[in-house]
Image 1 (cartoon, rainbow, N blue to C red):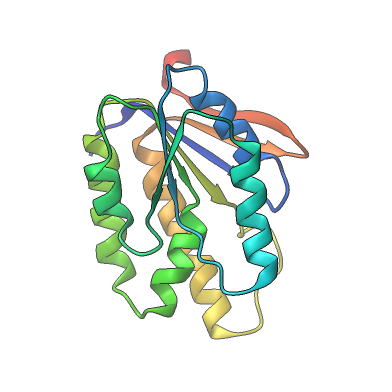
Image 2: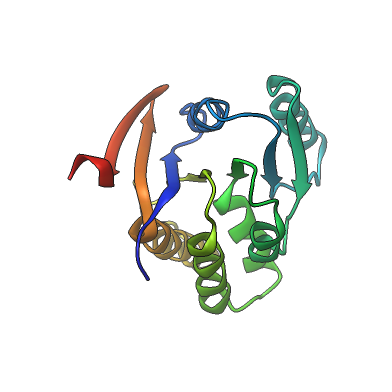
Amino acid sequence: MSENPYLTLVLGGARSGKSAHAEGLIEKYPAPWSYIATAQAFDQEMSARIAAHRERRGDGWVTIEAALELARAVSEAPADRAMLVDCLTLWLSNRLLARADLSAERVELVAALCRRAGPTVVVSSEVGLSIVPENALARGFRDAAGELHQAVARISGRVVLTVAGYPLTVKDVTLR
């Protein structure tokens, strides 16, 4: 698959500023903006995180819930709207716990992102910079996240890594 110049992947650790940076990128385009949310609120703490994300975003955002069917949500989102997907690793954990075929779903998602003709920013947590997890489920998640990030980065026109609130450009096809 070829690169999609309209696609930006924003990676970073927990509380690195990746979502705020991604929202700022999207808000450079005319509203309304599509926000594809992948989080599920299974406890009060996660409910509070979701609420904080919603409060931070102003008017103009249209939220699409896609905790499981992300490729379909990307494909069905209005093509004339800038779109933010937050976040791939939450979606991946949802699919891993559902015992989905992660390889097939990764291929389906990458294809949907390739077809997108409007500005699209995808957020994901970089989880591969730490120690090797002690259990098989955590190692499987870390490996699947790395494979997903590589696949999305290959087709992205731009890849940004956020560190302590600062974006670092890793890839930008316009700089070639």
